[in-house]
Image (cartoon, rainbow, N blue to C red; front, side, top):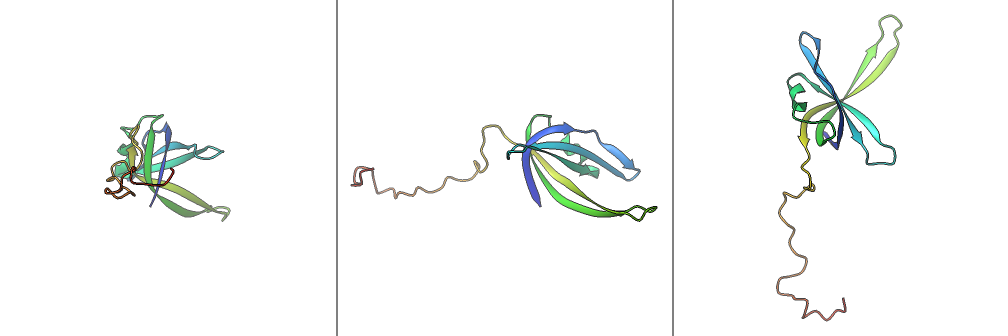
Length: 123
């Protein structure tokens, strides 16, 4: 399992590929490095509606699996490999709430019995 947080930049409609398979693609922007990346993810089957409450421009967190497959052209026997980032959970990132803010506060490094006045250090 992998996760990624970024800005939603493209939100496609659900595509009915076959009678029994449907998918929905979306693109997120990764601006965490010097060279921003546009990364496409895919939702399948009953997970397609997970994208409905998200809006283009919002920061979202995606949990996904990395999938790979081999394809052989029946005419030329040429082999190609494809990768898919298959999303299974999407969450809006709350504004102004840093990651981990729901965790209990860390204990103070300074014991409660010690006060700044009894400290003879110059800083």
